[in-house]
Length: 208
Image 1 (cartoon, rainbow, N blue to C red):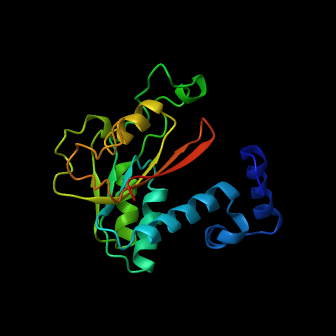
Image 2 (cartoon, rainbow, N blue to C red):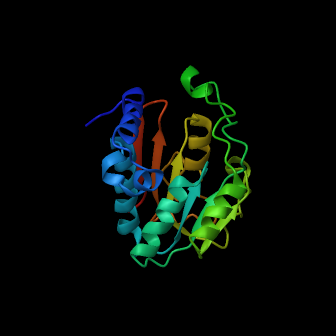
Image 3 (cartoon, rainbow, N blue to C red):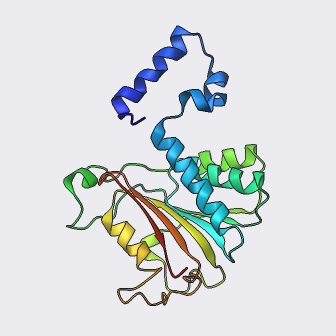
């Protein structure tokens, strides 16, 4: 199963054809989930379980609408994994690019602007605890920003090489020595990086 976005959108015709209501649409995950979304869900689930006994919390770098954020939190709560979830976003969309970024990647500039209030409403609805939104630009964090926190798993989805590289540099340098940025426990850190413009999914396991 490998669905293109234009083809996958046609699944909505079944909603009308079989008179499926909105609540049925969101509760019948097996019927309506596509391969990309299912892969992401299973991969996040896999990495959360793999890091559940490793010291450190979880951080998502760039949260957009909060879909993945709440997915991660639900997995943590269902399996009673006691890790705090940090959601970091400046809510300005994709704005950081370098000359290395592709034309397709740059076409997303200014898009994917998250709505903080919307995410807060969903967090309140589900009565989530041990979750914190950090209204910050990830590329401009000073060296001691994470001084009081260790992370075992960092999640990032971005079409910006600039953003990806900036954050990866906080986890390891070019000599593969532990990062100089306090708080990143590079002996145990996992990164899941998805670059949709380049069509790549990369999982980095550092110093395990």
